[in-house]
Image (cartoon, rainbow, N blue to C red; front, side, top):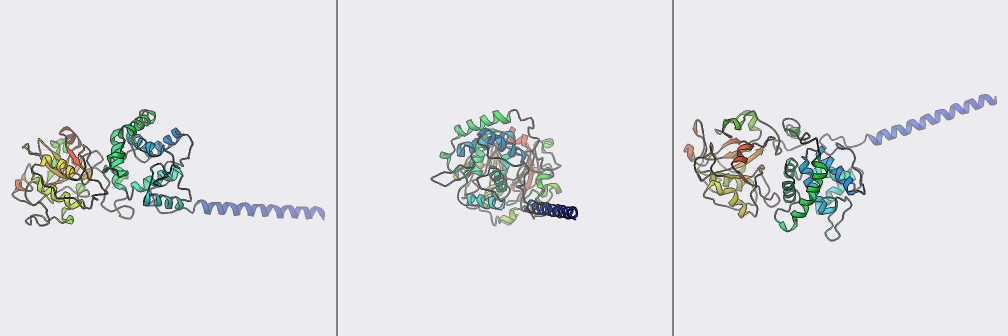
Length: 413
């Protein structure tokens, strides 16, 4: 009888242990799999978990690797590290005692609050480097989409300046740039990580598929608001003198997804200049009128020659021209074969930058092989047409671009 009792006791304890273990496994599975199922979340663990190492170099390497995994060039990743080293010494715990700015990027105000709320939604602390880097990508995919193109920069120092002006919002405050110091930091990180980065630009999407995955249904992105540095078209302007110009309404189907309609910004087509602040049939009339229409709060700037338009608007809006195109930029050039025969030059608006650097544009007073297609060249003032200019042509002929401060003059197509 004692033997039977012991056997029964052993069996009873055994079953109890099994049920307890199963219970823990079920609870663990529920807790582990109960995360956000939203498939539009672009802040997943694509680069694994980034630890808060006490070693700055280890933190920097983790941040560099994360940025590379998100499509940044080695130069861009190093440039961003250079900016942030001066801000926070790349310390996710960094707190400015006077302003309250916090984290590696020194987030402040509503951006700091949003970071903290994001951390809570992830079940983590805001001082987690992993959280802060994923919050960065969440900003670049939502509130700060205009900064995302900087990840494609191919020059370390250009990245530093672009990041300060666009992502950090310091375009109007050069006193905070401290370029010599930030560039020195960025160069050091590029030498340490980027120069030997055998991956090169292998993580950069060519824009043909993945870069546009959020633009078709409108559920995750903003419909036709396609990111700069993405997409491709069949037409090759480099085989046609560096540029192609289409009659209005005759654009190829694969180009149309990148076009913006000036009518939606209040301009009328061939109706006596209604809605144009500077009506007329020259390139400057359209470029200036459309530029003012799409940049809220922009002043009214009159320019005589197309070659001077970008520089003139930059001067009046407190900015500078550059050689880097962005959607919404004013572009100008002089002595442009295949585009204009006079030294007055030409000016236009950039609608989109393709993955290969070619730009989709809107312009007036243009002719193609079939003759005049818009403006005075076609005896049709107050009209426009669309075209594409190759990156190589723009670089060869020194095209200048002016992109206003997005906070002061927000882009509104």
